[in-house]
Image (cartoon, rainbow, N blue to C red; front, side, top):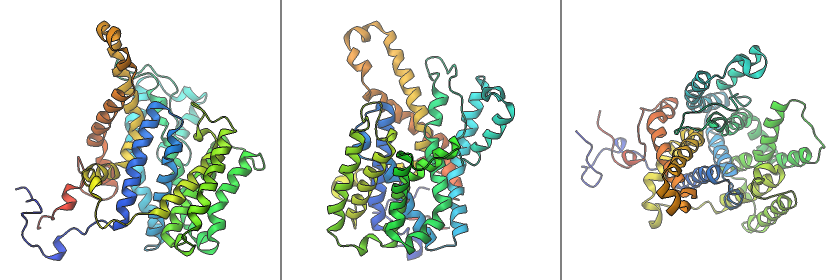
Amino acid sequence: MSTPPITQAPAQPAEEQTPPAPVRDRYFDLLRAIALFRVVLYHLTGWAWLPVVFPSLGVMFALAGHLMARSLGKRPPLKVVRARLRRLLPPLWLLGAVGVTGMVVQGWGPDSEGHPGWWWLHLMYWILPLSEPPGAADLPGIQGVLGGDWAFELAVPLWYIRAYLWFVLLSPLLLKALRALPWATILAPVVLCAALEFGRVTVISPRLDSAVLDFATFGACWILGMAHQEGVLRRIPRYAVPSVAPAVALLGLWYAMTHGFRAGHDLDDIPLGQALWSLATVLLLLHLSASWSEWPRRLRRWDGLISLLNSRAVTIYLWHTVCIVAAATMWDRLWGFEALELHVPWLLESSWPVLGLTWILVAGCIVCFGWAEDMAAGRRPRLWPNGTRRRGYRRKP
């Protein structure tokens, strides 16, 4: 028997009702949903201006840092770190089980890296991604369905998982440093980024170099999210952030413009410009941090979609690049129809139909693989967690 809608439900004891989401979390949910959509759009189109309009990665790291600080304020650090790893790793393991199996079936194996021992050792990064998990550079793909670059694209988002893992492991130390020296801790990653950019600091190992550079680029955003949770921003005058943040943003944009910012060479390729621009944008967004007692009228219709994107953020991020490859490959098949090629070539060249097809495939991945996020969080698996049940009443036992 289905649960009656909330308008028809009889009065229930207080313990039977699901408490509403914290007011400020709705604003953060909106930011995370926008960030995810922007990431998918960017990986499809490659438009260099998108990271400037909305620096998704800096925003996502800041929101994660905020949640991490909130958890560390309530529970012992070891339990918090274990809980975060437990929620992060199973979706990655599921991606690895499917992706590595597919690569091996198509010919990827121990001889791919020149020495079988290294191949087996590097596979461990699919279990604990302290460095980027390995993958094949070029495979045959599936004719008409999946392009040969699918394995390469599968690995594109994994740097974020590696960086997230390191931030989680370092968070207890970062929080202690933040409480002792707030602004010095926030700005330390930017200083490190500048030192790396100008050759004052070098890292010998290529794998370690990537991890250090990611920390230097986005560490300030993560720590700024923690600082927001700790109330650091509330202790400065209200006019300070709107006065300082635009200047920092302009400095980052100026640096990017003078170091080759263009299509195909955007903020992701200019770490110091990315660090400054992301820091300034995140600082402004956290300063605004709208408090809504309920969704504004224009956003109410998007509540279900926003809830879905937040509930399946890891699944969407891990699988969206493969979905883009599959969507582009299938859309390219339409060039085989002469009538379409002659009369609507503009449609075949457009990215927007591919974007729509990509989200259809992402929806399929949510249904097929999203349950891993629920299992990792200790929840009952759900196929389509758009928040409708959360807004109603729980069933009686």
